[in-house]
Amino acid sequence: MKYLEICVRAPAESVESLAELFHEHGEGGVSLEQVAQPVGEDGLEPVPGAPVAVRTYLPLDERTPARRQQLEEALWYLSRLVPFPEPEFSEVDEADWANAWKEHFHVQRLTRRLTVRPTWREHTPAPAEVVIDLDPGMAFGTGLHPTTHLCLAALDERLVAGSRVLDLGTGSGILAIAAAKLGAGEVVALDIDPVAVSAARENVARNGVADRIRVGAGSAAEAAVDQPFDLVLANILAGVIIDLAPSLLALIAPGGELVASGIIDERAAAVLDALRAAGFAVVDVRAEGDWRAIVARPSAA
Ligand code: SAH
Image 1 (tube, rainbow, N blue to C red):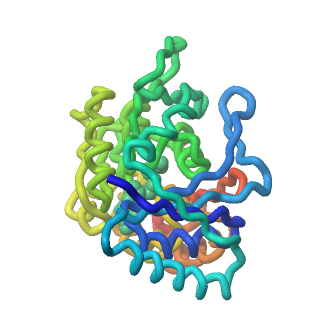
Image 2: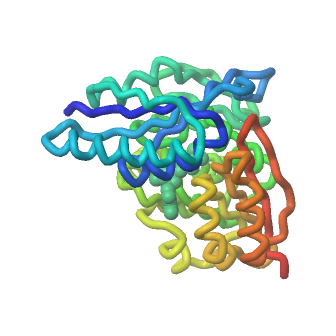
């Protein structure tokens, strides 16, 4: 199967609106790739000022010309409001698209305790090192993206052994697996994208933590049927976190916390407002390059 890839190398302030537009007009989700480089032993730092490549795909068939035109029109209107360069169009094979990135994915120390190992690479761990074996496939979440990295760092610091964790928007399952391996008692991992749900299931099984992680399709509504959680991780997008803020509050047990990520700098104030309006008190705002993660807890707690 061949796809039309649409890519905009966007300045930080336009990434969120482009991602929302691509979600609506593209297929199979949106990928965001910021140029990052390893720093020291356990860090990654986006190259300062580097644009973010925002990509989506359309299957090549008889509907492609009409869909491409709609997408180009939507981009034209958006370009009146926020700045970004001309979109780039290219044809890709599903197989290439699924595998090209693998070459650049290496064993990587992510936090004090956590390392990610792509399943196709060898690694001999140090004694206290916690290794996540991962093949994200088409799902988001290698651990290298700043939004994931911010969540992993917060998780490594804040996770209480035996606690109940929700990973909303699990993608490859990386945060859920990290939580289980760092000692969470029970983890629920949900995603609205079926591709992510199956990738997460495979990765959970591969890491031998299927007894503690339940992977399912869904979002906040599906999580609400469960007991409340001690820690809720939501690495999605600013717009989604704003919409879900009241539902997220209801999912948190007394004394529990939320880590909300996927927030580009320019949108952080709006997310903070929405969380406070929903009844959260902000505990910490963490930054990596242009990205922010917010740690918050129910203000009554
Ligand atoms: N948790 C992973 C993946 C983050 S990507 C990591 O930290 O790297 C964000 C994921 O959220 C995607 O897989 C997307 O399908 C999912 N998603 C988007 N909107 C959602 C919603 N409203 N509810 C649940 N998941 C959502």
